[in-house]
Image (cartoon, rainbow, N blue to C red):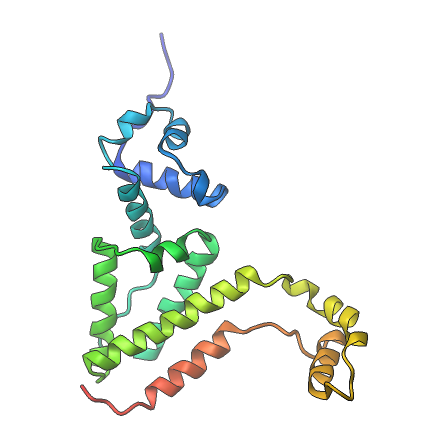
Amino acid sequence: MPTDTPRPGLTRDRIVAAAIRRADRERMERLSMRALAGDLGVEAMSLYNHVRNKEDLIDGMVEAVLGDVARPRAGHDWQGEMRARAQTMRAVFTAHPWAPPLVSGRINLGTTTLAMIDAILGCLRAAGFSYVQADHIWNALDSVTFGFHLLERTFPLKPDQYAEAARHFLPLIDPVALPHMHALSTMVADGRHDGLNDFGFVLDRMLQALDALPRLG
């Protein structure tokens, strides 16, 4: 008598999850409907019973990963709520490096995206900011989050290489012509400063500055 476990039925959620795993494992450019069907053990045409096309699939992937970003709550400490959103967004970007350009470069009107935007505006409105201020604040914080991720992804050194790199380049930095750069590089080289770009430091300073804005709501 056959004892094989039946293969789970194909669903949109299962297809999207498989696509996310493939994009995490390989480059986004390697994601194709044929390859995805192979991962799922089905014919490529069967995917189109659940996703309209690849663009629809990508929208689903973006919606799925954004579901892991903390949604700000109105009536709570607005700085804490927006800090949690930025930090969890950074974690999502780290886990899914393909996601940032798709999050910022697509017009996605999925329910998760729309609910997030509404929650952000609601949180900031409850804190006394006008809609225009809320829009500026939201975009300013996203610019920091996206920019920090880009710098982190493209910087040619890993954090544990900073001190060695500083020691290597220190002889090339003239202490007379470049005294300040030499002083800072010396601190990194001898371990008095780790040289790391601290996301928490940047985020907290921005939130504090934004909190000083006059409430125009």
